Image: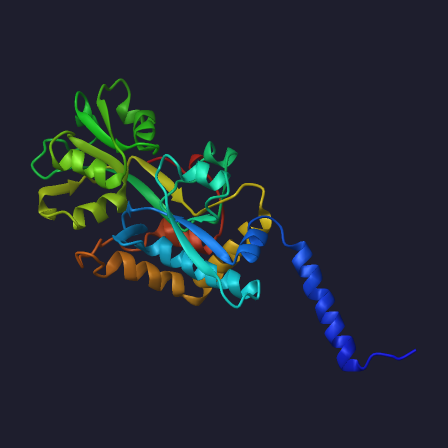
Length: 303
């Protein structure tokens, strides 16, 4: 019987290891490995977190973060090439597209809450948002109490108005809701006078105001409606993929790269208008980075 050389033994051992690794892959990681593609779901007008420049180009804090996650997954799966496909999603279809396998990783502005956790899973929180109200600069509306009898815009598929109605300061109030198909459309309802106020995530409102023709025509009220953890969605019951995504984010936190990305998109001039959103990194978001968690909105204290 002819025995294998040391080199041959090492080679066979390596092949067995690769075969075992391939067999162990399941869920989204297997889908990515087999297809050579990762599908990133993103938004067209979600403030500095995710937005489009047109012609299939998507940018923003969460978009850049997810592109880095894709690179880390490519490295971990030892893939020579990994194509990134961008799938625009809306507030209405983002969860169904995640559930049916169309999207592998959703990098927009989705709030992690207990209702959504029944349908999808979330990576660690990477942005802690505050719900706010934007009105015209000359509006008499100064807070929630002034919304009684007014028309309030929000985006179809979001939770902002439901959250507003649950706020104790909105008890027994009566206001009309109008819906935009996306955040830009909702802002247009305010801009055109069809709504008296627009309720949404503060950073989305700040981004929309910064890109308006006359930003000085609008004001974001100081009153905080809600505190919401924003995170990237992944498929439910796929712990291996969720672990890979979280490991990549934690590495970005430790290297300081995530903070640099935040500064780039929130504190520096960004396209297409080259204006600043101007929202410094909050203590709440810093805390979420340093203490990785997937706590839903309901576990955060309301103001």
